Length: 62
Image 1: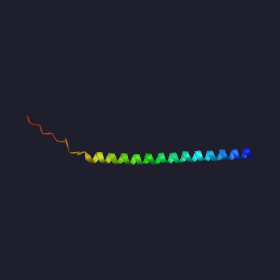
Image 2 (image 1 turned 180 degrees about the vertical axis):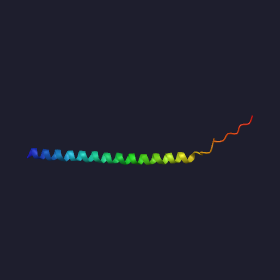
Image 3 (image 1 turned 30 degrees about the vertical axis):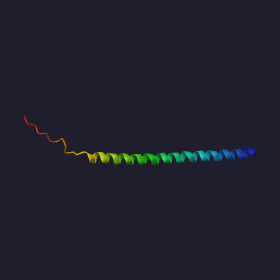
Image 4 (image 1 turned 135 degrees about the vertical axis):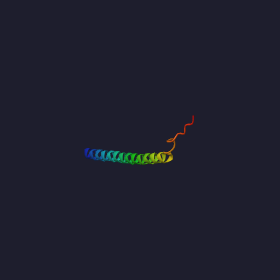
């Protein structure tokens, strides 16, 4: 009976470890998605802050 309890405990511990790993991967995936969205937002902000017509025409007088 002691061996059966050990196998059951080992099985439970293995499943708990797998669950922790799965949750950690899901949190990491969510974080990566959020970072990608934030990066896209920053790119849009940078693009909108630049005035594209600035510097296209230069007046030269001698």
